[in-house]
Image 1: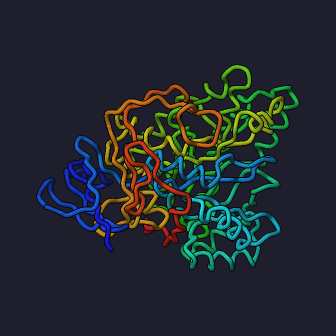
Image 2: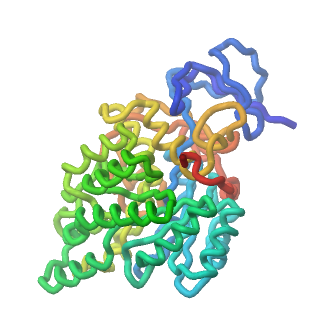
Image 3: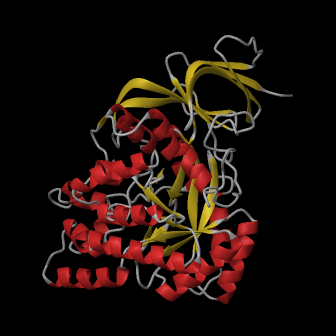
Length: 464
């Protein structure tokens, strides 16, 4: 038996078009769009989207559910985190499986499959964090690509944990040049940062704000430049994650002007928060400790410009929440022990809509950076990231006029604070479908753990 759903009367917004249209869904797929009222489709369910936007479900290509870090774990499980994502209009997350030093990629991937399987409210995929580059790891990269895990993250930061040296990075890039994989880079000079951390603590500079001061913008720019040059030597594409500094954007822009396959992602925290938050009195600044760190406000304008000019292609969240009580507090008296990460998977689509309201980006660019571009970047398009016949029916009915105040009191992430506490925004998710099933129905959660399935990916669709 086929189930038919019709969404009537809304403004359908994709990265390429804005059209008033009715949308016909059969089971899990979009099958047709038509002029409003022109088709007398019979349906089991009709959703009235009059006066609303009908947009693709968001694709958040950078989340860390249950990530072990600094002696604790990210506080959102795959169940709580994907439910919160759905509340925020995101219908696909790409999380990071972790290879530990001394272990294989397969062991790390199997561990993350076990965490996620049967627990997710929305569809999910994986990147692979490569912490131990050796001949066996390089061979395994080929195998993972065949299974639809087509991107590999390396770290120039966190010596002794995730860190790779330039030789290891070059070897992984050379392999990805051969197998079509995409190397994702955490670009900060971790060796130099560790020296500055040690010196700051020796001077008695222990408060959260010093986290931002030692992780200097120039060290993000230097690492970004080095990663670009290593990728150029290897003939490999490069995707730089969580770009926060104007100097790093300049490095990406220069590489792209040279025609290199270099891409950049930023996150809402860098667009809406700043070192002012890290400097909040008492220990409050610990809530905002993440890496790369928040920057002074003057960096924000360059990030917005990068999103408008396509020097930055994607906005993801780097959702990695730690509760203030009992987790962030591990760093009282030593900022280097504060777990790095912010909650945000539920806030991204709304914050970016506020950017439309504020005039930073257009509506179609909103959908591009939050839905279509991440789907193309990571081999999910047009199954995800757009509304077109044949696409998965991952669709959000969005009320562009609703007012809301962001707060830990009302969010659904499993964390005891909001990074955007008290922020007023215009726009709110009303109804969410994932593969044609209602997950949020007029602000009521109707989803279930286990609806979301692992989604294999093809390789990056932007490569020249």
